Each structure stands twice: as C-alpha cells, then as structure tokens.
Image (cartoon, rainbow, N blue to C red; front, side, top):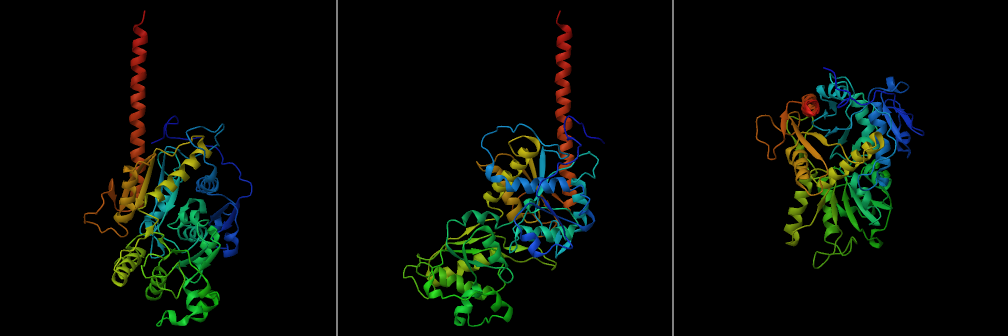
Length: 446
C-alpha cells in the first residue's frame, strides 16, 4: 500500500542541517556533556555520525521546544516551510513506564513501534512523536539519555515533557523552596536548572538539626550532598515534590513541620495552621508499573497520606496542587509544543489535527486525554489509547474509558496509522466524487 502524495506523504528530501546542534552517543555521553545548555540529540553509537530515520523528528522537536517562547498568536503562516519527510496531520504522544519500558527494560513491541513511526511502514510516511511522562527526579536530558539507551533510538530532550517540566514557570515566583524526592540531590539540580535561585532539600534540614527525624540518620553520601545552613534564619516559601520520596516518614515529617509553620520558618507553629507555604506535586499517580508483578505506590499515594495526616493533626483540609497527567495544563503544554513544531516544519501555525496518546493508566493517561478534549482550552483532538502492558489489568473495566484498548504499543501505532489512512481515503473519495459531479455539470453546460 502506497500513500497518496497529495494527502499523506510529505516531501522526501534530506533534513536541513542545524547550526550548533550537538550529537552525543548514548554510550559515551557524560552528565557534564548533557548538562550543557545547547541543542542536543542523543543517539546510539552506531548512528552518531550517520543519522537514523529518527533524526528528523528528534531535531525538529528539540528546536521547537527551545523556540516555544516565540510562538505567535492567531493562525498566521510563516513564509517558508522546511523540507521535511514527516507528516503534519497527526502525531503520537507516549507515556513511558508501562507503555515503552517496564522495570527498566524495553517492552518488546516498543522498538518495532518506533521503527514504524520513523518510516518502516506500508504508508510511506514518518509520524512525529513526543513523550509525556509523570516520571521525574531527573532532567529532561537525563531521561533522554536513559530512553535512548533502552530503546536504542535517536531522541532529543525536546521530545520530553516530564511531570515537573511545567514547574519551571514558577521559578520567578518563589525565593527559597524545599524540593523533595529522587536520589541524592538530583532534584535540587533539576530545580536549579529550571531557574530556582535558592533550593533546599530534606537532607539540608536534617544536617542542620539531626533531631528533626528521630529515626532517620543521614549516610556519609547524603551528608556530602547536603548543604550546611541555619534554618532558624530561613523562610521557605514553597514546597515542590519533584519525584517519588525515598523516605516517606522523614520527608512527611519535614513537610508537615513546614505546612504547620509560620511563614515557612522551621521551629515555629502556627495557631491557625493557615500560614505555611503552598505545596506542589509533579503528578498524582497513586500507583505505577514496575518489574514487580503488581503495581507499586506512587506520588499520589504520598499526597493522599499527607492530606490525611494533616487533617488528623490540624483538623483542617490541606490544599495541594498537582501537575502532570491528568492535569489539563500538561496537555496544553504538549499541544503548544506540537504547534510550534508544525509551524517550523510545515509553515502551519496550528497543532496537528489529531494526537494519539498511548498510556497504561486510566486514572491519569486516559482521564487527562479525555478531559482535555472536553475542556474549553482544547485546540485539537487527542485520541486516547489504553495498552495492557502496565497498570491497567486486562479484562477489567477501566474507570475512565479510552477510545480503544489494545494489547501493546505496536498495536496502538498500527491502529492510529490505519485510522488516519482510512480517513484520508474517505476524504480523497469525497473530493474525487465532487470533482466528478462538477465535470458532469460542466459537460452539460451549452
């Protein structure tokens, strides 16, 4: 089956060179290499000097994300589109854990799914794609390096939207902030990379006062990562849970101390319990899929636990804010990225008509997709596809209903591409029918 060049098949020309773009091997790149703030693509060693079929989408998304701040309003069209081999009519967005990866290893069909999107298909096209994950605790560059290794795929940080990615927009709002979760001080580094000027961690607080958490003692490594500070002279303005807590008891104790404080000053206690700093979570997944036979507790469970303890201690409800899926803001951000990509590559200042979102968790992936479509802020259509390789258990009724449920991510890609092909055939048939009618009418005119 070959694609109709007037409908599905874009221009088959070599992708343009991008000045300043760095190509790093997923096997050789170091933390210092990926931390440099310049356009970046991570690639398997075999493709370092010979770009793969995934190169064009990876580079274009990297540049689009960097240029999102200059996205123009309205529907004006840039003057000259770039030569591209990728269709602009639809795109894919993927959750990662339980869809592409499980327990640190690629789900078998994931590699084939990526190959199909990158041109190994019967339709003669490539399809753009991004990754929208609630996973956090690492920079987008680190997630890019990790996934490139796992899938042996050419990927750019511009293709990643993590749960905490939208938090970067709050860096100018708050001064001193507490960042919770993740390994060591990685989340501190992520927050500082986002522009937060004064970032503290639970380890810093315990280092200042070891009696803060009676049953937790910092290891030598944790002490090395923790910064000395006098918290009697410090007001913490906001709390950000960037990644899953590695110490629920200690982290919750510190968070509760701050929530019940006066203006975020440790060692104080508010009489009204409404003077503490706000708290933000990068996502609200109660469970997530790992290599274990059953799902494991996630950040949403920590949030529920904190809300229950706060209620038990103060008698008041705790107000919290979550980012990530299923929050509509995450889908808005992803749509803006795809719009910027389409504008730069196809000279069309609107997002692709359809985005196929592939997820494994009905409560976040499917719910978020469906609610975005129903919201007033929706500017295109997101089509939800549920896979059976993660949180969702085959044979059960999901709480939030997807457009379709399929066994795995490869079937999800096949479903969407076949659906788009059929839609184009109908459009073509309709146009040909209208043209035939017009021709008949013209023949009848004397």
